[in-house]
Amino acid sequence: MILVTGATGTVGREVVSQLVGEGRPVRALTREPDRDLGFPRSVEVAGGDLGRPETLGAAVAGVESVFLLTGGGPETPLHDANLALAALDAGVRHIVKLSIIGAAYGFDDLVSTWHLAGERAIRQIGDRPGGPAWTFVRPGEFMSNARLWAGPVKARRTVIWAQTEAAVAVIDPRDVAAVAVTTLTTPGHDGQTYRISGPEALTVGERVAKLGAALGDQLTLVERPVADVRDAAARAGRQPLVVETTLGNLGRPEFRERAATVLPAVEKIIGRAPYTFDRWAADHVEIFR
Ligand SMILES: NC(=O)c1ccc[n+]([C@@H]2O[C@H](COP(=O)([O-])OP(=O)(O)OC[C@H]3O[C@@H](n4cnc5c(N)ncnc54)[C@H](OP(=O)(O)O)[C@@H]3O)[C@@H](O)[C@H]2O)c1
Image (tube, rainbow, N blue to C red; front, side, top):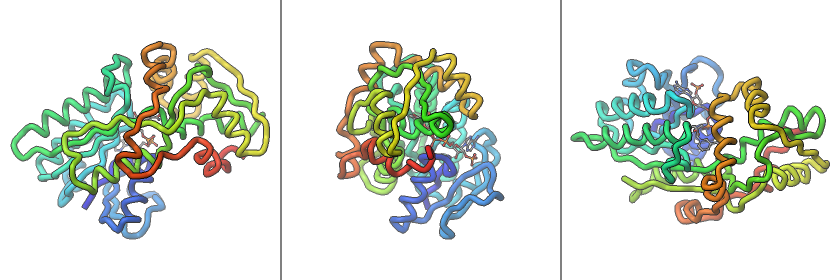
């Protein structure tokens, strides 16, 4: 049995779907198990909250491997530690944590720092007798962050964003999930850390042009200060600190250079090239109509 946390979100839902496609037994963790989750019938649903350790014992019982995804906020180290301790108690063999690329470079921004602390907690718990092995998957920015553009694109054919000149090797969450699924289901990944990116570095302007091409329409890009984008993202339900940190990083030359670097790991691990932004846009164009 494989436990997938974050199973109702962008990456976790894809991890569930790919594991089910391989015929693997899957248990999905959510804080709201009673709502209609839209999983295939074979998926077991477990109610639980990573912030409430007393809810995690039943979720990890009988589990061999865990895909561990936290919301990415300041609670990340505590949530990683809570799940790793429950996994230790239950005799789980392997945890695959979704981390972030900044952790690979030791960046001191908030989000990288939270994930690094989470990784450290998992390593320490893994070092205890009978502790779980671990793998850390460290992606750069997701292509799906473009979903935040949907409102203004629908209303005015306009994208409002910050740091639009920075090129980023954005990655399709389906590829993040595919890397996680491979590390969960094939041997040789214990104690490994994987830096992963998409196949090409694209500025926001280039991504907006590709999205326009998928829509068959021309989009206008408007550059705004980070604080304006942060506030708009907060109104759309995103964590403002995370948006501010991610965009703020792109103002730092050392991060900008790393963010633009195309890495070979996805193809090495999953055996095919990562998806392009053209493909992501074509597959998600309805969100923007
Ligand atoms: N966006 C990027 O560009 C990017 C890049 C690199 C790394 N990351 C990392 O990716 C992660 C976010 O992935 P995502 O975009 O797939 O997430 P998402 O779509 O925002 O979904 C968040 C998931 O986390 C679950 N969750 C939140 N709080 C929880 C809690 N207290 N207990 C149990 N489950 C909880 C939610 O489940 P329920 O609501 O059903 O309980 C939901 O399934 C973060 O760790 C972030 O740092 C993001």
